Length: 185
Image (cartoon, rainbow, N blue to C red):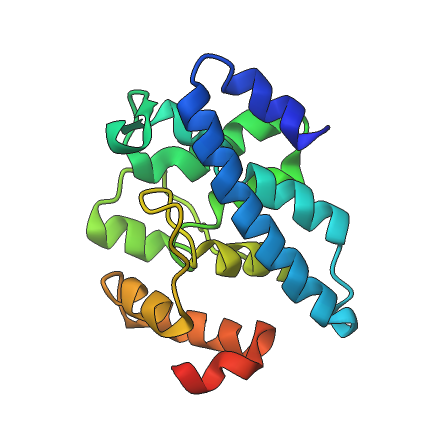
């Protein structure tokens, strides 16, 4: 199913949010695809990356985040889970997994329980290379500051508030996906 058809369907009544979502999703998709093309040895599925990167935040309209034009009822942290449920209802299991697994560098059941996060119990860590790549690319862009691109260093710092484990995973991803930036860490 075409990503733009899905976005247009669920964002038809909120043009500001749709434009923000499209801008952010294109940023993530372009970075992920650029990286994937630099690594033919990884044999990444470019068509899937393009679609999943465009849909990774499809659930944000269901959340309560007025600063970015979201007027739903759920905590913003739920957007990945909600997007996953929406895409599963459309028969898009593989893309649903990307939605659920892109928060931070992934969330473990232990982290969810320890921090009392508003998510159903589960393991929300990216597993496949495509899941990891989209999660990685997403970390450089914020919907709150859509025109800013974080550096590798600033991205690592932004993840520190979630714990050292996430920073460590991010550093591994830098070495794997953009080794030319590893010195910035």
